[in-house]
Length: 114
Image (cartoon, rainbow, N blue to C red; front, side, top):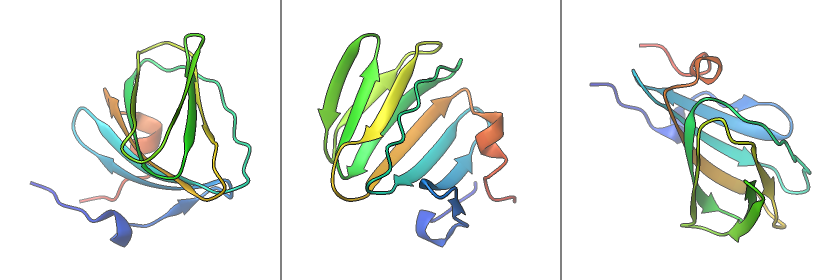
C-alpha cells in the first residue's frame, strides 16, 4: 500500500496551472489548479478514459459538440479518443481532480517515487 497527501506533494508549476500527480498501476490521478484569468482552451484527445471532478471554482467543459458549466461537486466523464477541453470559467482558481485509466505515462513521470 502507498499513501500520499496532495498538499504535501511536490507541485509542478507550469505558470498556467499547478499539478500534483499520483500514479497507480493502471490509473493516474491528477490534481490541478488552473489559475484565475488564464485562458487555457486546449482541445485534445487521448486513448484514456478521463473523469474530472470540480473541487473549487467554475469549469466550462466541452466534448462531442456539447458544453456544460459546473461548480464544486460537478463531475464529467470524457470517453477515450474523443476531443474535449476544460476552461476556468470563474474569477478565482479552478481546482480539479482528474482520474485517467489506463494511466498516463507522461503524467506519471511527475508522480512521487517510492
